Each structure stands twice: as C-alpha cells, then as structure tokens.
Length: 95
Image (cartoon, rainbow, N blue to C red; front, side, top):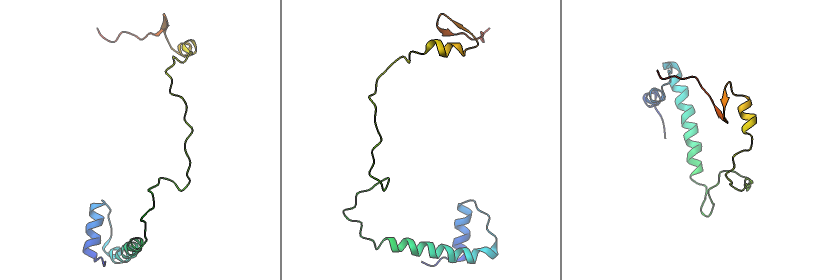
C-alpha cells in the first residue's frame, strides 16, 4: 500500500499534527514501511492460539471479600479538625 503526500497530510490533520510539506514525503515512506510490517503479521497462523493479556501465565492472589468496619475509628477521628460522638463535625454552610 503506497501512501502519497495528500494521504499523509490528511492523516496528520486527523491526528491534529502539524507536518511541514518537506516532511510529508519521508513520513509517507516511513508509514509505508510500518504498514508493510503489519501486513507481514497477517501471514502468521494464529489458529488455536488463545488471546492473552500477558506472556506469563500468572494469577493474582485473591483474598476473601469481607465487609468490616476497619476498627480504626479513633485513629481516623484523631486526624479530624472537629469530632463529636464518633463523627466528623464541620461548620454550618447553609444559612
């Protein structure tokens, strides 16, 4: 697939890139090389290959999902600028 200068200029505009006219021809050759390499990938037989997210077959360790209160209310409220009866207190904002 041969790209001409007009196509490269159009791609650059879509990508919101400013490309000088003198750089369009070298960029067209470079993009041609990239597209040729991608076309080579179509020749690879991938039938029977499972899709993967990583080359290493590893599973993340999982923990039991339990709902807890944290047991640190005193430590958390110690950082508050104001606390009363186990809750944060804030200044009144509605008149």
